[in-house]
Image (cartoon, rainbow, N blue to C red; front, side, top):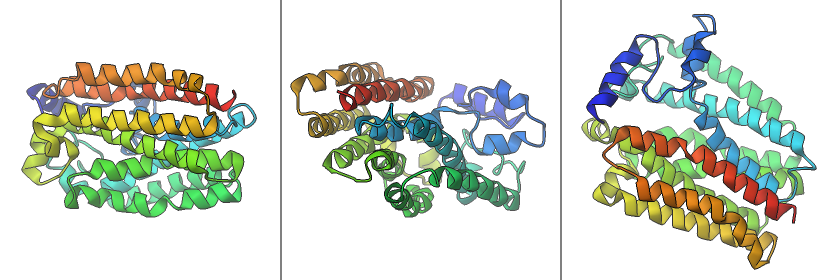
Length: 313
């Protein structure tokens, strides 16, 4: 973590923010008592819910349901916001003591004492209730598929303690929506959905490795493991390899859905964006790593449009 990142962390402690917060002004509009809970659920960082939502949109769009079930896209977005928030609250409950030792996370509401652990559990329950409402909008196949992710979600906070690749586990979790979105429209999980999901897993590993570049020094000091630390000086090659695997698997998913070479052209914009991330990445610059990570919201939009084109062809 750079000196600027550390200074940002110190500045953020004064009002419960963290250096990578966005839209803090919107949080400021809330009543003072509600602000720590909004920060705990990362409502100041919408990038997280977009990255959870996009695989859902990929699955629904590539299955051909983006127009017929446009309402389901809205429900999936609401579910992504609520469940990403719930995941963050759960993660912070588990990681409270570790977060106090890392400059970027020391100002989180549980770590700095702004929210008690009991209040955090209640907030977690309320967010899960919103997720339950979204879950009830799905058909039974998609409901069962969605339930399959719960064990992965519960185990994620512990992965950084036992493996150098917690980003891979996060990939399994954050990509699950591709299976949910596809099955929500078709009632099935065919090979194309599985290939789409696998490609999303590698996409998440790539962009979360970039995100983890911000914390390498602090992570090493407190014993947290990450792919960014494991890859060391080879991080650019590692991210590039993940993105290449992503594109290869997405190509195969497109081929399953619409076996026409012209369908592959729809992937060119997102492929160009991922290539730009790798080519311009500055691994030692925390601000650049954060900017590249956030740019994956655009990558998700480009992929969603590609899935829409192929799914409606």
